[in-house]
Image 1 (cartoon, rainbow, N blue to C red):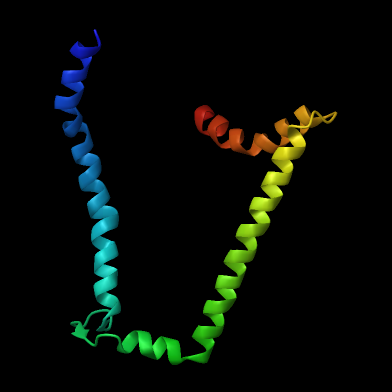
Image 2: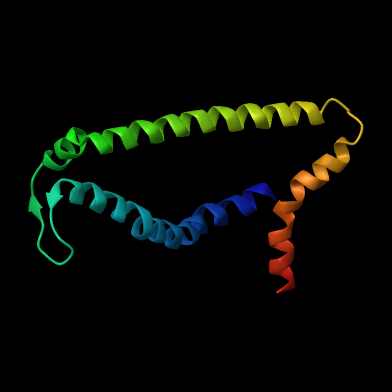
Length: 123
């Protein structure tokens, strides 16, 4: 029975993966590489692009406000990443300890994840 199902899946799988792959390339891969190319160019919204190489990056890295913003964003990202993971691990560990009322806390904590689906199903 397994071999009967395996051949059609192998043969028809590409038919189903094709549209998704094309959509992914159009919606993500092409704009990604286009953005990289444009980061090395000088242009205005409606003018032609002029290749300037690393001039844009050198200009950005020499700007004090950009460097300050970059390090502030990096510090915020690292701090929030560590804080969110430690807090999440602590909550998960506490809920597995069998503390009284942990089922109610699980319900209240998970309820926002359900509300969107319930409202969407109702609509």
